[in-house]
Length: 313
Ligand code: GFB
Image (cartoon, helix red, strand yellow):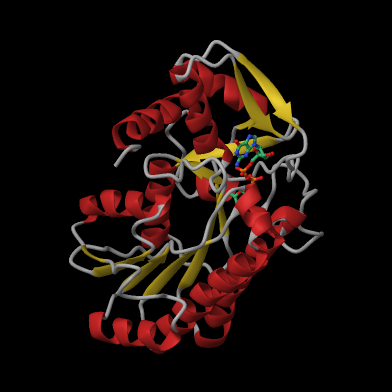
């Protein structure tokens, strides 16, 4: 397996202020590379010409594409046009312009919603495009599938080393804790924290609480992405998961334990459940040497501490 070193190389993190981008910036400090990033206000990655000019001027060697419009189940189903347009534009611009500007290697990030709604569990990489998608996030999924396929197409036609990784549901410091737009884990941290503060006895869980999700701590993901950037050179996407799934109700109970909430959970069944399960099969990345380190309770604890220190900033 051909290995590359990032030492003294220019590494561009597209999306450095997001959940994944922040963690990547932190973990890449150990690699002694020159980290490049650019503010959203200075460069809109949906703008082809401006992105082209920025790449020509800054000449990165390697790019992590962690930039995306992301959101939880409600946000995804409320803004389908934004999700498909923004994510398609970012993927198309950055992948094509990486080819045009001779970037040595690119790592593109997919999402677990790319797999069919009723995939055989744990979901293997080759389940892609074998069945219909989950309707609450098909717009986002279509854009992410296009990103994966772009990497593959440029690999086949131009022999470019453009790889793509498929992380499961992520969480950690720097997440979006807004109840309406965020994902379930930060949303429940926010709701349960507020319930304790206001001495409330009940917290509402959206849907039935029965769906299962696999959660991966973002620093584990960042380690996996750096590992893949250095060692993985195939154009087929590769799953990154923790290997453990939990029901939404049990997730809420674990968060309650961390925060010290002793009340009850009630269910708002007017909200969607989404996919019933999406545990991914991570045998491929495990077999080449990466394993998830952080267990869910510890990861939630670290995330909650971050939330307490940063929520009013
Ligand atoms: O994390 P989440 O928003 O997205 O919701 P997905 C996961 C499950 O938790 C759903 C339930 O069954 C929700 O109904 N849930 C319960 C809640 N309480 C809450 C709450 O307070 N907030 C939220 N947000 N959910 C997303 C996709 O799917 O996952 C994206 O929409 C992306 O495209 C992302 O793929 C990783 O796991 O269902």
